[in-house]
Image (cartoon, rainbow, N blue to C red; front, side):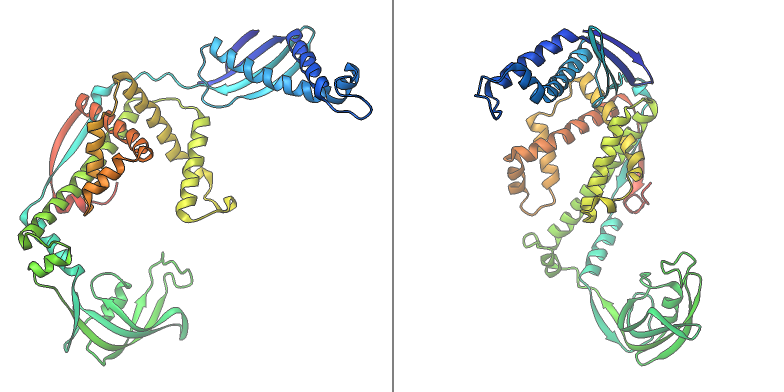
Length: 431
């Protein structure tokens, strides 16, 4: 076998393979003899069919089978001989027979050689989240809001109240779809309705009727209303005031805290806030590490892997959206950028893991599972369920190994802590 390799791109290779035709012919003849012993052709006894007849009937098929097998094996042998690592299947073009040889050309991409560098230049800003008593008080108020009730009041409405109204909207004197409602509850100040509409509901009492103008924003989802001014007439049924439950043991029991009373409940709330903040910090740090790793280690990547990853992301999106018809799937191009990032990160992280021999031991796996299950009421049972399920643990192990890689990069990079209030951190818009 004669093999030559040509680089046609950063990662693309064009490999020409020449094979002696005699070896192929011998395999074809051997295969035809085998077929002749078992073939059934009308007019001939089994095993007594003349070789010429066997060749006429089965020659083309057998030759195609042999060529296919020869291509597969010789390609595999050739890439090993040349110490190449294909990123995906090849595109093969047979060049046919030329005297004593059979040749073909295989075009494929190879995996890049990853040599990590500048890891000491990775810079991370680690949020040091401060949870104060005021933060806990605000969280308790939010929880009380979740369990609040509404009480009818005989006064004018104000922010925080709930008004129950009928409304009817008209555009140039004509009613429009979606512009009518009966006994619709609107909590003032929560942005449920357009600003002009909420403004028109402030200061009303039960029985009040009024008309006011509402301007629809230019980017309103209904194009026929975007940027238009409509007239709305409303009739007020009642005004209701929010009533918060008392912060006591009965309130704690609403959240299944039956032992330790209010003190235990407040402690649980604080611990839950700490857990949420820690998880967000972990995610933020991971994102910073990944972005910095990408920035310090530019890398050519096989487009074969990018296409595969994009298709995987597309199928995930279809599953989430409940789409079964592939013709209705989001365009594959939508996922190209995310796919490229994931492939690059995958290759770089794999090298970090390999270079440092990172492995997840039983203790680390258990720690991760315990963190996952901490928010469940039956946390101990959930932990044992995960640990006792090999399939689930097989899915968890790569996540833990990746976390070990992130930790290694943190230890070898530059980390600077930054204090930030819980409220500011948890309410920060996603970047």
